[in-house]
Amino acid sequence: MCVSGCSRSQPPQRTIGPGPTDCTTECPVQRNFVIVYGDPGQGAHNAGRLFQLAANTHEREIQAGSFPKNTPAFVAGIDRIAVTHISTVADLVSPVSVGDVVYLAYFGHSGPSRGLGLEPGPGALFIGDAASPGSNLTIRGTEFDRPATDIPADKFRTDAQVRLFGCRGGFGLDPIARQMADQLRIAVYAYTNHGGSLFTTDPALGHGRRAVKKADIDTPPARNSTSVWLVPINGSPTFGRF
Image (cartoon, rainbow, N blue to C red):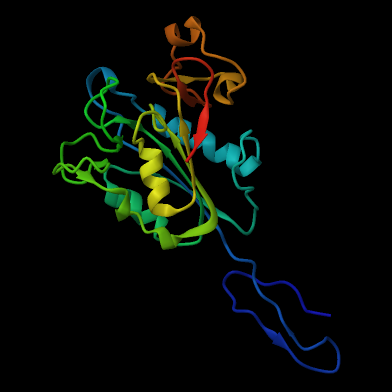
């Protein structure tokens, strides 16, 4: 028999003797779940603390296994989960650099890189409020942009996935979801709905079990709500895989 019981702070121990069989007890690989949320935005697009609240809601659901999509199963006592505020692409790279990332979720502004409408152009994550270098993730190529190739693919497990919660992350000819999938070579999920987004406190809508109603648009959640979901403003929330 093998002696079990391996803590993260201790290396595997080899047991030799007349009792237990000679063997090595190995710790399971610790996988990392990374959830990030961007800056709130400016003017009419200022989301206040709602990106953070939605990220915190998602963290609880991932830990409880209650998010009804095919996300990796979180194993308490082995896996690690962290929620981080980011303002730049470099801020995004930092938490995934820990390695063994099995899941990355982003909450924040996103959409076509030429504006907030439906103009053609490569998709982007508009991570930061400031018009500064590296505040956007996109192949657009301006001084404010950094490409998805900045994200180290070797820090992700082969069975990892990315899930983007924001406007039109999977909509258009060259959405940001596809740019990230091409770089990371793993599954990237993003909303394919063509419109903007809203926040809701209704888990049925947050989990994609119904379509948006006018009342959802007219009654946004309070900015100190406990549980908040970020969904497209039109139709039922639909994730596409890239």
